[in-house]
Each structure stands twice: as structure tokens, then as C-alpha cells.
Length: 222
Image (cartoon, rainbow, N blue to C red; front, side, top):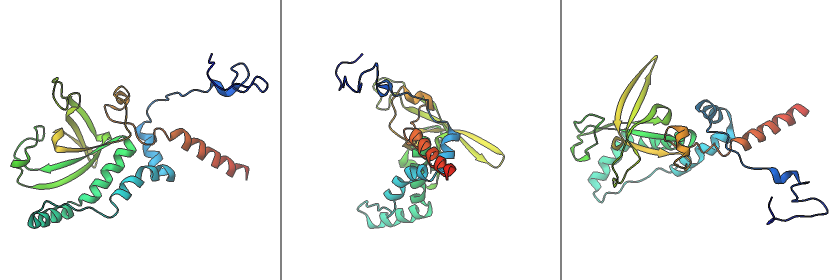
């Protein structure tokens, strides 16, 4: 029983014995599965807008990189255009918001295996940038040394690439990935989604379901 809230003894408002609303409480129904998230994004216009509006507006007018060296800026601008980096950034943020995580796989040729840390100073070229959402990106090992600045975070990932009817797997060090996160998620709750975050659609799911059910009900009545 609570005695620190508004109660009206005449109408029963706020009285647990008469007021049904005081028994309402929040309940966690579990993380939305990938099929539900995909259906929401691809089939519900409101859900798609919730996911896409931030990256679309953020990068709508493009971006500039200024190193202070005009020659270097020109080379970087050409590489950004060749790699279609603006679209890759937009997609990376979009899929992270939709599925709770995504990454850009940086194709920097530093002469080392992809499972080892990237050494930028040794990179001879940047040949590709791939967008991968968390459905194809699984944490494999973690930083476990106390005092390490990234303690508890993934050190390597298992990347699955689909091509036609076949799939290819590779171990990639986190330094070769630009990670995008979803909705801020507690450490314990990350266990529901393999160490990633919840989708931004997680909190809105019940409201979207109620709204669309009511909309369909109005159509049925008509």
C-alpha cells in the first residue's frame, strides 16, 4: 500500500481498493527479435521515419574534412567520393538505430591480418568501406585486462558476409571497425542482444502496435 499519493475518498480515485488504474505497472516483454525489427522498418512508415530521420538530417548537406593542408584535403575528398562514404555513414547509423548496432568495416591495407589491430601508419591504401549491421557481426573476444581503457568491450568480432547462396566468416579486430550503437542500453540488458544495444523501436513498439491496431479498427468500423 502507498500513502504518499493523491486519494479521493468520495470517488475512490487513488484508493487501491476501488481505483483500477493504481494497479498498472511497467513490464519488460523482452528484446524485439530481428524479424520484428525488420518488419517494422520495411512495413511501417512511422517506424521507418523514427529510424531514418536522424541519419538523413544529420548528413543531408554532406560534411567537410579540413586537415589544414589543401592538397591532403583534396586527396581525402576524392577518396570520400570514391568510397561513397556519406551513404555508408548514413546506412551505418540507420541500421544501428534499427537493429541496435552496426559497423563500417575499414579496408585499410596495412599488411597485417584482419584479426590483428590496425596500424594506420602502415596502411598503404583504403580500398573499401563495407556497412555491416549487428545481425552479421558477433563479438568473439573481449578486453579482459583490468586497467585497460576498453576493459569489458569486444576486442574481436566474427563477421559473416553473405554472397548468393554461400556465406563467408572472418575474424576482425575492433580497430578495423567503426562501431555505431543503438539506443543506450544497460550492461545487464545487453545480454539479450549479444552485447549490442536495443533498437530505438524497442520503447515505441507498444505505442506503434496500439496506434496501428486502433487505425485498423476504425477502418473495420467504417
